[in-house]
Amino acid sequence: MKNILLIRFKAIGDVILTLPAVQAVRDNFPAAKITFLTSKENAGLLRGFREVNEVMALDRAALRSGNPLRVVPEFAGLLYRLRTGKFDLVVDFQGYGETAWITRITGARQRWGIVYGKGRAWAYTRGVTRTETGDAQIADANLAILRLNGLVTAPVRNHFCLPADALAAARNFFAEQKLDPARPTLYIQAFTSSPHKDWPLAKYLAVAAHFRAAGVQVIFCGGPRDVEALRPAGQAGHVVATGIPLLTAAGIVQLSTVIIGGVTGLVHLAVAMQKRVVMLVEEPAIERGLPYQHPDWIVAPDQNGALSAVASEKVIAACRQAFNESGGSVSC
Image (tube, rainbow, N blue to C red; front, top):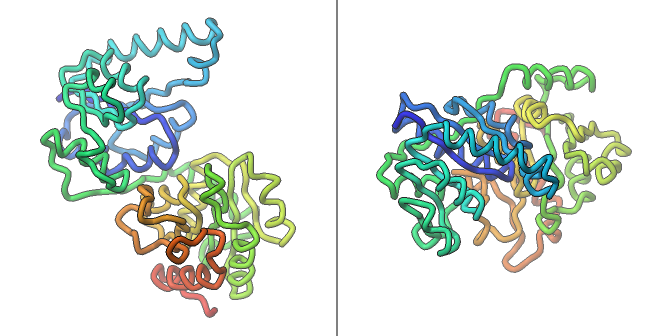
């Protein structure tokens, strides 16, 4: 295989969870050129995928706009790149109808992908069904697509390589906020993209107050939409970072000791950066996005309980253990 195309549009966490599969593809085809097609908003994230040689960023908003002045050039550009890429192998980790079409349009001799609907199987030379992958964690399901097509997927690697400029930007943030990278730091990602997976902010604030009293630096992070929601954290005197570039947030994760949050992309990114996380999960038995290879890093409610019912003390205990395991022991 000389030219390989991998496809995953969204979301941040799901793109991150292709990382073990991307690294397995590289292990099997060390001399191949690997191209990764993703949504425009996630393209920067691929800078941390050192096995990827080229990134194709698709403006899906333009394609869906209905405006011919936006649709035509975006679609024409996509077709040109797909046909001139001369791909030998395409792996569709997304399984959307549109990614099935994209896979077929490439004309690659080998086309593999996850098939969620029977009507999409025609696009692949080998479509893998959910029956074959089972309820595996998302990263393991991605690896199963490769394994069922004859690739070797062991040993598994899951390493995100933070770009140097992102770490520098994070160091600048620490300096501006008068934070010391040498001190224990708790990074809190309070909100996910699915509100029903969020733990109450008031309880995160209780955890933050506990550890700040023990001398731990606390940072609340979020996206642009979280500015108002995180205002109480700022009012409580905590450092708050909202709307910063994704890779800068990743740099802050790198400088932090323990990362806590729900089932969200930044927490998955932290795992891939070999950071100690605490993930709050309401239904771990059916959640396919647990911390990869670390299901013991979750905090869950009692059986049939709601995530909101998880006590702050339980999360404090989990964070204390995480600090001890990461070498950032605190007296609390």
